[in-house]
Amino acid sequence: MARLESKIHEVIVTTLSKSGGAHSAPMGVSEVNAHFIIQPFKPSATYENLKHHRHCVINYTDDVRVFAGSLTGRREWPTLPCNAIDGYYLENALAHTELEIVGFEDNDPRSRFEGRIVSEHIHSAFRGFNRAQSAVIDAAVLVSRLGMLSEEKLQQEIAYLHIAIEKTAGDRELEAWGWLMEKINQAGITLRHD
Image 1 (tube, rainbow, N blue to C red):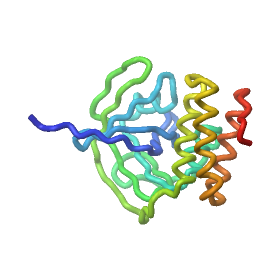
Image 2 (tube, helix red, strand yellow):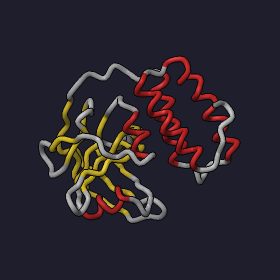
Image 3 (cartoon, rainbow, N blue to C red):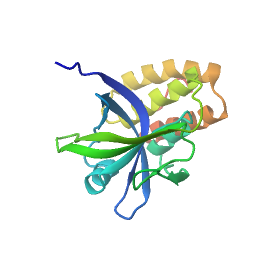
Image 4 (cartoon, rainbow, N blue to C red):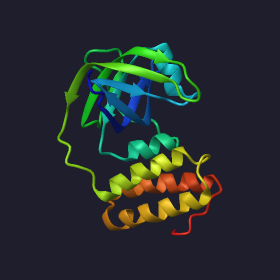
């Protein structure tokens, strides 16, 4: 029996809307036996777009502003046309994978789309995340779950992540962190470390 190998990747998924516009959203996707599993919450633009248009792009980027921006109303990032599918990838992607959706399960609260790799492209070297970049991605995940986490848990996690921001953040990371902290404040939560 073949062994299933599963990995979780924190990526930006770009889909096409019914009008043909690019929609990018941060998402943890699984890779199982050379297929990607995308599980957007319902309702969401990614869910609707994948139901309508059975292609998407997995973008790999080290610009954490895209992760933070997608959660804070800053979704307009430059894109380029794909090579093998009808779609777009992020201009600042270090690499991207073009997928065709070959399986769909309409579960609640998250659906399950299975994507087959059509083509993959490397644009620039990935030099690794510094601690601040990782902290921004972790904070973005927390912000995406604001209604699900207790305020105490959120305070603890953000306080810990803030240490990495103080020690290793550059301009891009500071900007992204600021957007996320603003979103938390807009949710009525006052963070103790600021």
